[in-house]
Length: 142
Image (tube, rainbow, N blue to C red; front, side, top):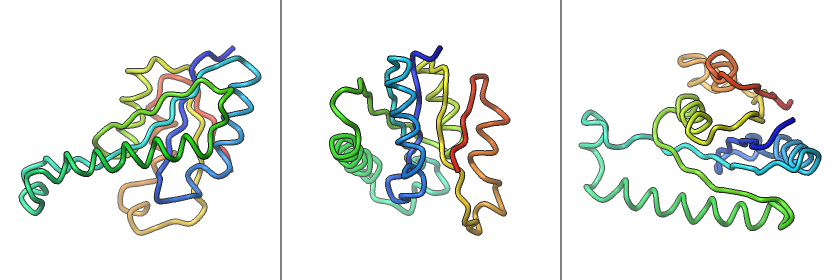
């Protein structure tokens, strides 16, 4: 039924993967699907934002998040699962949608955070945006 499953994670927020990861792993095993672990790096290159960071900041941030994502996968994803790490730039929900299209996934498994932060009230929850804008099935794990 599913061949490519995407799991968006925020490496700084355990709630973004602690319940969703086991669900995604079970689905991968059940359907023989590959897992695509996606994290979103904020876009520091915007002129308004970029002027506050050193020129090589985006490159260093990308290298650091690459290492952290590989460590996460090595520690959390069993070896019997075919896995790919993906880093996209932008806002979380837009990056998730963009990565889903590029990877041609057929299911997105993601957590719904129960603790609302100020940014959720201003921008709206990322999971809600993904559900509304995704062209593929989205499973929200609570």
